Image 1 (spheres, one colour):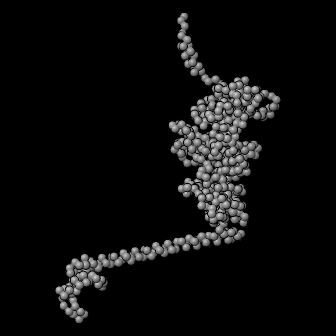
Image 2: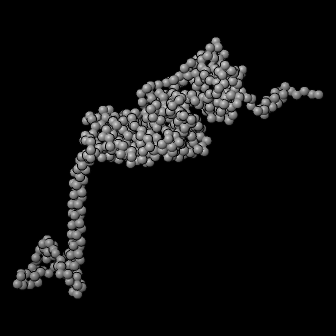
Length: 537
C-alpha cells in the first residue's frame, strides 16, 4: 500500500476538521475549561466574540475581558467585565466557570479581579454545587445557565456603556437596583467615566444623562409606552422604544423591525447619548441621533420659565409666553442664565387662565397624578393656585403602571423646557397666566396691526383712484377722437350726459395757441376755433 505525501495528509485533515461541527467551547464556557489570553468565545452566528482585549492606545499594559462585534474593526466593544481592575499580565490570567457555577476572572497569582457573584437558584442550599455553562448568545448576551436551563446570571443585567437591541434597561427599583449605562473614562479607557444614562430614580417616565450626580440632559417625558420613530433610509427601518413590566420592575428596550443593520445606543465619554449605526461601506459608525445637541438642549440651559426653541435655524433660548427675561442683559447670546419672570403676577381666582403651548418638551420636577381624565387633570391644577402648569397624555394600557392616563402638574418653576423641531413631536403644555397679560398682549398686537392695516387701506384707495382716473382719461380720449372724426353723430356715446374733459394745456395745443388761422368765427360766448386733427390721440 502506498502512502500519501505529508502535505496531502495535512490538507485532508484540515478539510475534515472544517466539516465537523464547532466544538462546544466556541460559544460556551464550561467548568474546568477556562478562557485564556489569545482564545475567545464566538456566538453561533459569528456576530459577537468574548475574550481578552487591550484598547489600541492603552500601551498594551491594561487588558480586559469583554464582548465585542466580531466583524467590526473599531469601536466594537459593547461590554466589559473588569472595568475597574484591568489585567496587567495576561499570560496566565483566566476567566473560569467554577464548580459552584460562578464566573471568576483571576490574575497571574490566582487572585480574583472580577466575579459574577452568582447565588444558588431557588431553594437549593448555597453549599451544594450547581452545574452549568456560560454561553455567548447571538444577541451579545453572555448567559450563565444551570444544566436545567435556569438563568443564574447574564451580562445584559450588568450593562456598561452600551445598550443593544433586545436588551432591557431597568427603569424602576422596587426590588432591584436601577440599571444605568456608564461611560468610559476616555476613548481608550474602559474604566468607569463621569457620565451615566438611565431612568429618573424618582419617576420612570423620563431618563437622564448625569455628569456625576448633576443632570446633564433629560429625555422627553413618555407619552406612550410604545414609541415609534420615523423611517430612516440609512437603516431601511425605524427604531422603536418600548416600556414593559417584568414581575415587579419596569424596563425599557429598543429595537428595529425587519432591519439587518447593526445599531446600538452608547453613553459616550463626552457626555453625549448616541444612537449609532454601522456603515459597512465606509467602515465607520454613523450618528442616527445625538443628545444633547445643540448646547441649548442641555439640562436647564435656558433657566426657569425659559425654553430651547429648536424650530429656529440656530436653536436659542426664549421665554415662555407671558414671561420676560429677569435680566435685560440676558438673551444677547441666546441664553437666559437667570431665567424668566412673569410679566404680570398671578392672582388667585378668575383673573387667571391657562395658555396652550404646542409641540413642547414638558418641564422637569412634575407631580404624577394617577387615574385622571383630561377634565379632571385640568381641574386638579385650576383649583390649586400654586399649580403653574399641567400636561396630559393617554398611555393606552394599564399593564405597565396600573393606569392608562398620565396627568402631570407643576407646583413651581418650569425647568428644562423645549420646543420640538419636527412636526408631530412634543405635546401640549398648559401654563397658568394672568388674564391682564392677555389684554396687554392683544393691546400690543393692535398697536402694531392697526397702523399697518390703515396704511394698506390708504394705499389701496389711492391705487383705486389712480385706476379710475386712468380709465376716465382713456375714455375721454376715445370720445374726443370719435367726435373729431364724426363717428359720434349717432353713436349715442354721449347719451349718459357726460362730456369729455380737457385741460387748458390740451386746448392750447389743439388750437395752435389760439391762432387766428384756426378761428372759425365769433359768437355770443367768444371766439370759436377749430382744432388740429388727432392732437388728442
